[in-house]
Length: 417
Image (cartoon, rainbow, N blue to C red; front, side, top):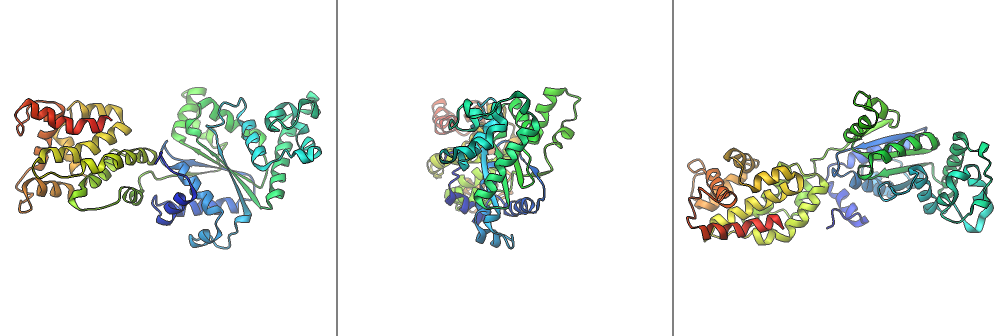
């Protein structure tokens, strides 16, 4: 798994299992789009890595499957009503004019410049010659094919050209509305994000058109304030671009975690359970969770085998490797604190106690099935193991330095790799 696999089978699987608990929000967004009477722009808000791109691919998959849409509660829906176009802003960021890069991408997708009908192509683009040129025509037309009188080129004429392009697509696809998804804004340079929003606001205009912008609005607001001054009202400024905002929940994907980690509550798979705790405790985003799962799938079987003859090693690998790996992905400062042996016993207690079952399972493993968890302090034991590995002093279970070194070598390389 490389972050996330966006092929249809995987998207279909995540929808069928509702792993991210977002199916109802996708359906509501489709209904918003279908019920729009004028051009509208929606913001899909979520922090970087919260699963916005997954959400949008699920949106596109449901939008083109009538039976699935009906099953999820969208009545009397036909995929022919809605044409959805996905645009990755980051992949096209090097183009000088963001809005023209978008137009170029649309032109290629829908073959607006048709070499078999050059007359129509010339007419469609002639009013915006100096803007489109070979960029918008994908190289099919030359400068000489255009009427390029400077006094003909103004915002109204550019808007008319874009309006005609949308009309062309509506007719070609025989649909009622077009939705253009603008994704990966979080990866773009801040100045390019603002420029893209501004140019789309001025140039793109059609009542059958809906934009969905995927962005972290908190970070976008910070960017706007840096550009225009700290006293600038960034929230009011963003209202110029977005008619409505949909905010994603970033924590409701336990089903997905269970599926990807092959959920098993047996003690021989305790590393899976502690991995789930680490994901939640460290507040990994979906993007970070995919990176984490990819690594844990590689090392999980190796570190998940409990050894009755070396209980310190087993506990250290099952607890500290999943935890340290999650911190390394999420927060480098907390990761460095963890690796330096600077955690307190309270930190250990908070992590181990994040799930009520884990202290009991570890107590049972360490002391045997007949032990009473109220009579032993498994947290203190785990803390002493942690100190021995990461701070290399005050270790009272393995007295010799070579034993401490051996234990450390069973744990630390898995985290640092």
